[in-house]
Amino acid sequence: MTDRPSSPNPRKQTDASSLLLELAKIFCLKKFSRALINNKPLLNNDIDDHYKPNIAHDLKSFHKYNFPSFNDEDFERLNLDHYLFRFQWQSNFSSPIEQNLLSGGLKVLDVGCGTGTWILDMAKEYHPTNIYIGIDILPILPDENSRLSNTGFIQCDLLDGIPFPDSTFDFVCERFLIYPDLTDSQWKYLFSEIKRVLKPGGYLEIMEYRIGYDNPGPITQNRNDQVFRYLNSKGIDPETTINSIPQMLQSSSFSDFHKQDKICPIGRWGGEIGLMMLNSYETSQKALNKRFQPGLTEEETDDIFASIASEFDEYKTQLVNFRCYARKN
Image (cartoon, rainbow, N blue to C red; front, side, top):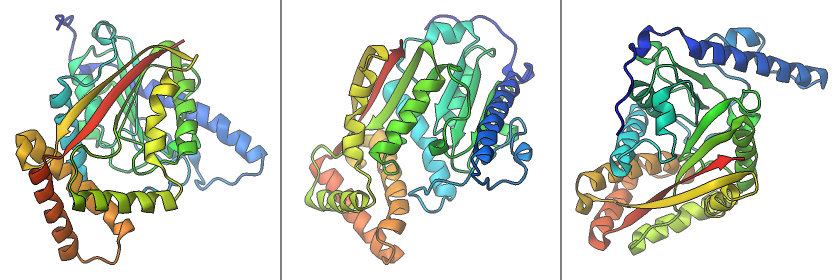
């Protein structure tokens, strides 16, 4: 890796991210003004109170998220997932932008940022004049004590639009956002919003799981089939949606397309990575189970996942995740 230019600690920088968040505020106030003209009611009485720099705020009503509750275990899972995939890929991204990040001055957006770990990691690693913004629907964004001055976070429903003007960002990253939440039409709308806020010449990078398993056992396959029937009943077909990503990034709007797969073992047989992957799988699937099979007791749920964990080891089950990126024309 190229040596980074010396620079002061980002915590001591002017809070440039607050200027970008102020831009989001102005953009959304204009958007909401149009809504008021069209007699569309807003749920927040005082919009300005929701647009103070560096605090989480709610643009409109929450989109119905498929994980009905969020606890400390889920919070920890998202943080561990970040380090798991950074270790697996030996990087936080694959797009050819590292030299630009080292030089500084980039605006970076993390769509569906979760706990913000990726943003904080990037802000610590690269030049402090870069600005990093994270947006997510869940109220799990980093507290003010954890943030760097060149980072900012907005809590909002992405399906109401991304609250920034056209061509704002040099790099947009989206990771593990589609499954199990978005319909195909919702993803296409979100993709159009991501493309809108990305500058010409900027890079979009998407990281998702390939749907399904390599070497699943019968219990695992049955469980997977049940989950997909449930999701399909809600109008969600993640396999179709995720399979469409490469085609979308190879459209006339983009160039320099690249895609790479990584195989990830799941279960004790896969060593440390396999155990981390197993923990992530169980935590996320148990959360989904509360909606998918609400009548099951905790003991019954534990029994199901114990059987699946045994199958992972017996069949040496694997998951495949991929990164793909392209440059906006």
